[in-house]
Length: 154
Image (cartoon, rainbow, N blue to C red; front, side, top):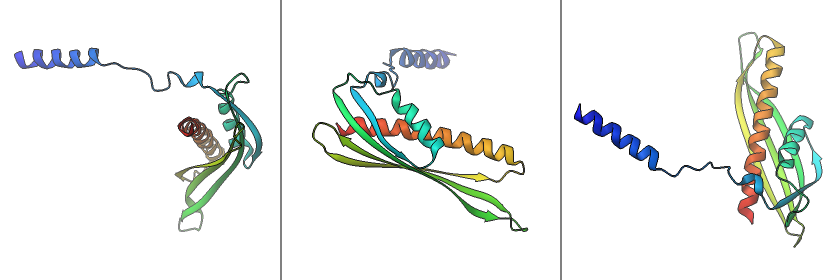
């Protein structure tokens, strides 16, 4: 009984005394202007990345970056069943960012890649919806990782 009270008190003490702050607290207040110069590759991926990057961009910022985006999405068969139909795919998304700093015309390249293994569904509608949700999630995570890497370049 005494052990339980001491354990509960200790847990409450450590939980209430920690200084919790969200990781993305100040990311909306970036001092950047991201101008997308050129986009090539998968249209769905590019539109999602472009809309995610627009969240962080504003015209009245100090740092100006020109960005060139090249995206690639591949769906490679890994395994086939007895009849020869593909049963497992490897879905790979790779996005290359070519960043040019407007101030000193310095160019840097960032490549981000994501891959995922997925089963082939019998229903094509489910398969297409599942792939589109994977593309959307990958695109958002790539855009977030790109902004983090861009901030670390400063």
